[in-house]
Length: 90
Image 1 (tube, helix red, strand yellow):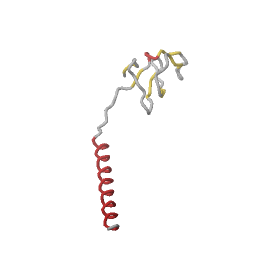
Image 2 (cartoon, rainbow, N blue to C red):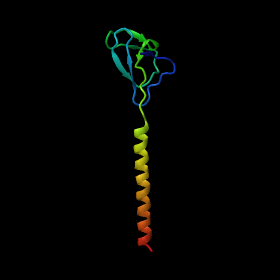
Image 3 (cartoon, rainbow, N blue to C red):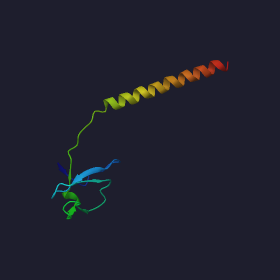
């Protein structure tokens, strides 16, 4: 586990932090605070004493591949509709 530092960001989905005293997990959506009261041990814990899970990297290949296929299908369908409308109005 890593400690929170000045470069830590929560992102849109929030981030889980862990108390360094009792290891209770809490979800936060921003880090614009200097200390929080832990829900487990009820102590005030400094922001830089909280712990973060190590980052796990996901493969984006499947996601981007699906996005590419869906946008390609939309492009083909719009071209077919344009072609049909052109033939009808001639």
